[in-house]
Length: 433
Length: 140
Picture: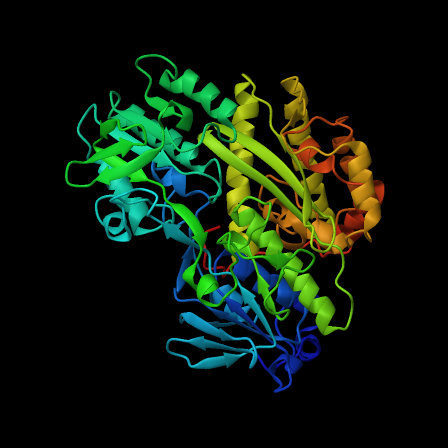
């Protein structure tokens, strides 16, 4: 099958049959020794989006993803796990469709070192892989040192950050569910930039929905390292309505940085945190959401600059270190939020640029949106639309942004939530089907 | 034939969304954030570079409307195979807020006439066939 061309299949099955199977695999040329080889580091949203859209544009290239895990678990939708509206299984996808439908090689391994001169990428088990173009999308590295006493081991144990969907998410859910009646969950929300900016408040909302049913006197304390956050007016509107926000009995309390919300220290043995102001707070469940930076792969390979993020040429997202290396997602120092939506669209921009360059064309003008959604409950959604237009070499992108208005209309809020869920499903399919 | 049925379904879905919106006297006032461009600034940026291709613009729609606009199993309407003139009319109505919607007014306001036409032509050229195959290993 893999050696067949589209034309061969048309001969056998007829054009309509081929069209209706939506065949977008590789051509014979993609298996030739002289086919351009595009290697992708990381099979998350950014890497998968790039690889799939690269294949849709070009049947003649060889595409390889290097990804350590056999499955990918989506973060969008994961906060609903806390209220039981979503499951880990629903958010999990594998690489079969990328392999079988789009003829993308997926090497289950860890990429280690780029040899820029030889155009080779080293891996732990699979040796060196030669590339013509390398696309780097390994995701962020979680940073613990902003809270004294917090570390990766504690996060894997009794203090899950659950900032990547997986076992830590389930551990945090279990801690919430087994908490004593009237207990307190403390969520520490980090400074910008981090993934999906409304996610800590979305998490608090879905935890509150669970507590309302099973532990109605319990509290959620959001300790914030910022003075404000996106969609605050929406979240507070909903919390006032459902959780008594602003009253003495509120199920959710929010402490901004300017009122002592920044956490400085964790005492794991006593289950307390200490704020920058020296206040000591005891909680039954402590969920410190980490800060993040470009990962070790990026820094070890010299892709980062002194800001800790990865600089890039904005038209094509090629690295300033090597023009045949492209960078994307959480690690780049772009004036864009670190959302999956953004990563998916950066992937499409890179695919288009590489397709143009391989054909000897000047890459066209990029265009990126982040038209995103969040929820404060199963019946309350909100939307944000951001548009990023290219403003020139060495400059970057302009930003235009709008948010949905706060409304008392329950139907509007419900439809926005349905739009959010629709987005989550379609987004997963757009990357992996 | 299949295409006609699918597009009829799309029109129905759109109609139900729109009547619902009108029935609850839906009004939407744009909420600006700190990221706002003046009209002049926006014009200058758009004029300074060649227009992004219809594909570049339209591929931004896929997270909601499916790859190549071909998600036919969801409430958000598919765009693949849509008549270009219908796409253009709808987008311009969303852009001017003449057609109240849940989110499309906030999506459409950034696009020029030429960009809307380019996206319309792109989607009109796509097969109106469900993108995701039954053997997709994720959960639909």
